[in-house]
Length: 114
Ligand SMILES: [Zn+2]
Image (cartoon, rainbow, N blue to C red):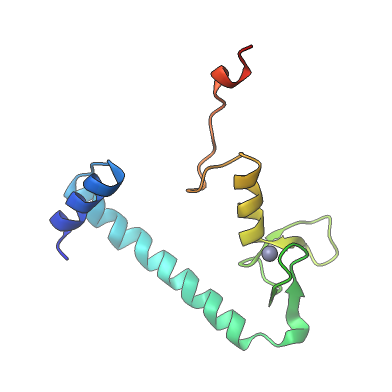
């Protein structure tokens, strides 16, 4: 798929318009980072022994006790949050702090009108 096709599809599906240069820069800078992060997560899940894993108190998943899966929390003995990052993200969306893309929501003043 050519960049022009991707730009057209983004415009049609998501109503956003970007220049071809911007798309090329995102693909060359951000995609490799994300792919490397996902590869690291998969490798950690596969190679970490159960004794070095931690159970998320929210979803019950057994995940490697690593900051890639659990947010840092210095108040806790193991310095990691008790809920996994995925549950943290879902909770933030549920509470309305962020939208599905992880962007902070701006307070809508019309919500408080009587
Ligand atoms: Zn979880």
